[in-house]
Image 1 (tube, each protein chain N blue to C red):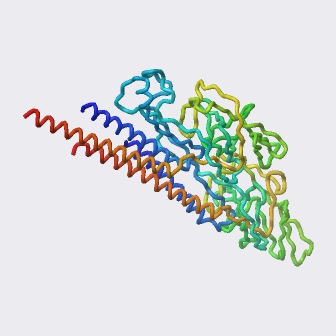
Image 2 (image 1 turned 90 degrees about the vertical axis):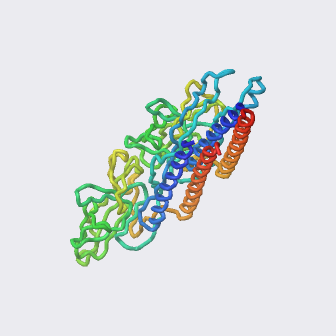
Image 3 (image 1 turned 30 degrees about the vertical axis):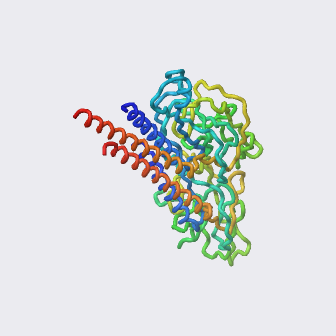
Length: 261
Length: 235
């Protein structure tokens, strides 16, 4: 009987994690470059009370007697479906159409990867993320620039009062991974490479499988509010039902305790 | 009288097992590819066979019915329409699963949620570094990247009531059970939902509880009669 209590409790804690994840998705519905998470569940270990095929009176047991012990979250899967592109007309807002990631160097010297293309210039004219981390490979915009253009293949050119013909000042590079869901989330829309994601492969935007760069656009979050609401309702009801299973088991124990009045 | 008490006690044990199984079903309402367990009580068949018995014998069976397909748009979420199974290579040997939430691992192999390689008809399925781009999965389970074929998912079928041993993580072992011919479709961007029906689960739990209560009442009545008999007769 205590089995049912623990089994149902595993269901409740699983749904709690589900609601936590949905809440995080919903909170990031306006975060540019955000990729939604989904909790994947599997069923827990089965306790074999009788082996299938065990000998018993009148033949062998055809199915055995196995009782499952509940559920457990096996992974939070990042879903890398593309978000919608929003036209912002800001020259340093860049969106990736394809599977690639922008590369960013962190203050500790490590590299991080991001889908969020809200770039800006720092005091020295270097291209940095909203948090001030440098874009990799580094790109410095000359002080007298009047217009920056980024082409689909990542070529950055600048026009200035002195040179009305745009001059190439650098090239963007994008990184791809064989298993993007294996990246580690660092927060601030940044991801880090792990053993599960594989090593990054860098490539020129526009090459096959890397994706091209769109200037003046931002990739919005791929969270869909309606889907998340439906998930939240299912999670809440599943939580409620598991709690009912605990109440039922509790009631049965109470009845057993009252066998002797 | 003592026999009656024993029968009620055994029935209560069997109903507790039923509640254990129902709690497991309800805990797995959101588990991809989960198949509901059902407890049946075998008594009638034993009486027919001329065996005298006091208690119902619980039998747990897994109902291998098709779950609803839910759209996820994730390209490596695969669902099976039909009675087939994906096969994955685990350290304990080949296991069969209906959970198609796959991904690529760091080495570019197609793996399940816990990192076990998914089997193709000719060996493991791997990404081709020469052919980047989105991988398309056809209804027949063929994987292609652009125009480069990457292989075909191995889909195994078993007879509907063939015994499969259930392990954790929705993975089943076939043992000596032979595979049979069959046809299943692979749907890309979908996952198969759990077959647990919350309403049925609730009804099941309520009836279990009330049956348990009835047995408990019968037990107490008999206990009281016994006690009365002992008091009155032994006077």
